[in-house]
Image (cartoon, rainbow over all chains, first blue to last red; front, side, top):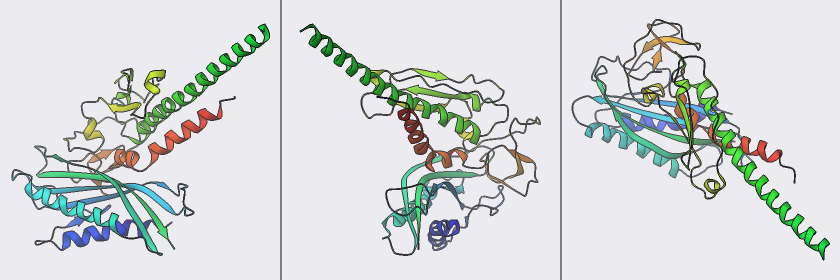
Amino acid sequence: MNYQAIRAAVENPLLSAFSGLVPAVPVYFDNITAVPPNTTTEYVRVNVTFGITNEPTLTSSVDNARGAIVIRIFTEKGRGPARNQTLLTTAVNVLETLNNTAKTTSGVFFRVGEINGPTFSATEAAPHFVGRIDTSYVATVLS
Amino acid sequence: MARNRRLLNELARLGENLDRLAVAAFSRGPARAAEEIVVDLQEAGPVWSGRFSNSWQIDTNDGRKTVGTGAAGYPQRLYAPLLSGRSFVGDDVKYTISNFAPYADEARDLAEGIFIDPGTTPLKEYDRGTRVSGYRGDLIGNDEGPNRSTAPLDWYTTYVRGGAIDRQIKLSLDAELGRVRL
């Protein structure tokens, strides 16, 4: 099992997509400190979690993992949902592209499930308007 | 003639018993799965006072339900109501598991919240750190900081979406079917 390869399979395209925007939007992954909470700077938070590893399937390969991807978009509060939804669309497009990528003979074969959300929240205490989506994934490490 | 009738009666009774056994096996499997899922959620989720862990609820699709106490204290096991024969028919959702704590979304990291450390010792082990956003488990720091969390960020989404529920239901059905002797 190569957890790092699985993580990279979803993190790299997301990083590329948000870095390619003008202006670029910073993306923070697991165990990376996000911007301080008292700023209005927009940013993206991506959490990749692992659920079950090597669950037997109908195929011969058991080198697979299931888990969840949670993407949170933080944009300025009090400015409406438009900017947040634009950035959410970027994230969803990346997930859809992952699903459309053909299976190869090596690397990681990655498929996401249905996407929950987006749900939005904004509390009085926190300075951001937050949009959140989550999805399940199944990744198979090919060798 | 009388012997034939007796044989027919016995065959009919056997048919009924087989039917009952099959329904019981399939009905108890999902009930057991629902109970085990609640246990898993109680173990995986935050436990500070215990109120959230004791606020899970299992509903059947025919309107029956069992409800947690909602009280503070260590998590209590919740028993699922058995499905009736009629409600078992069809492929709709048999059981719905939910949490009725008023802050259930915040506890499950689905919504931001305002968190005030009560200063008491939680019933579960905790991590310490600094909360980055308004999400309960969004702590950073190497076990240092003003905030405490008794479950990792996105524990609920990981459990629900990471395949654990599918596995629970399959395991429970396997266990129940293994007890059926025909």
